Amino acid sequence: MNALTVLSSGLLTTVQDLGREGYGPIGVSASGAADAVSVRIGNKLVGNPERAAALEMTLLGGAFQFVQDATIAITGSDFGATIDDRSLPLNTAMSIKAGQSIKFGPTKSGARAYLCVRGGIVVPEFLDSRSTHLLSGLGGFEGRALRKGDVLPIGDVATSSPITNTSGKLRSLLAPRETIRVTTGPQWEHFPEATQNAFLQQAYLVTEEANRMGIRLKGTQSELTSTGGMITEGVSLGAVQITPSGQPIILFVEQQTTGGYPKIANVIAADMPSVGQLRPRDEIRFELVTMDAAMKLFRERESLVASLK
Image 1 (tube, rainbow, N blue to C red):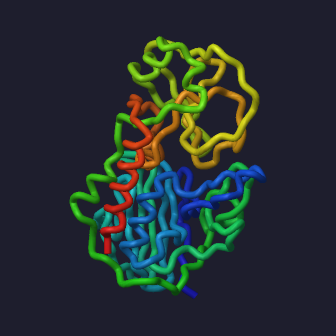
Image 2 (cartoon, rainbow, N blue to C red):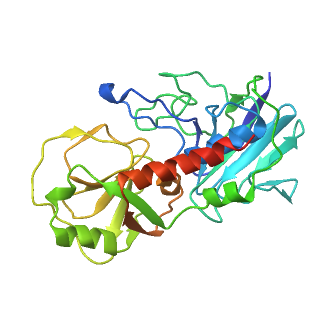
Image 3 (cartoon, one colour):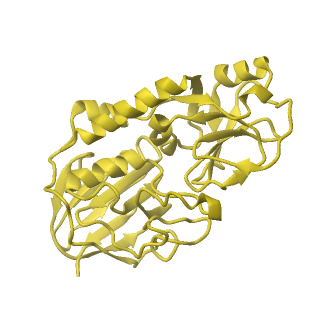
């Protein structure tokens, strides 16, 4: 059986795919990769289906040894990956020999790096997905972050031949944005015009409390207040809630499925990978766009990803 062994786990390494859609009504959020586009591209590079499971590392990577020869791709942020002290490139399919080990260090850019292996990581599926849902302890490898000594099976099914590397245009798509584009949220009109303007004009710092459930932000100018109350309702991935503290939270891949805080905006789908690469103390701003513009940006991104063949 082909497999990889965890020699060191890093800060937070989990098995992730594209998540489990459609289970919000029973209280289970999608989970999945924080930067789903990087996983999709990594899987395409090694010849996997886009939904194949990979390893997601956060801020500090681990070390992994392969039992048999393997084909891999590293995507997402630069964690200084090496084999035998030789640096490995991002966004490129590479061959690994049996017994070799890949080592990752601390991030040099964004928050998360991905290790995609031809055949995928074949932990058991839970609700149609192999992604780890840390909040509930379900899915992935025993529902938890990886530890030293874990052995993860690698599948033997791939759908196409590996691709050498990505185009420059596609690599530019992967660069995280510092300005996050949003559409108006369900409670946008509950906020005074001055508050709406403050939300769009000030910078926000990502706090140390940011995680896969939500990206907590702190404004650099003023707190935001809503003029109306609301009852608890369903919430979506990327919703920007304003808490009683007056500070925003971007609901992320393991978000609660209902909430009672007003949602001033929603991050557009094309910019969710950038949210997945935010680190504590990063600074961002918000830019309001129309729904038509959001759909156009999404189609452009999907066309670029589809062009990788």
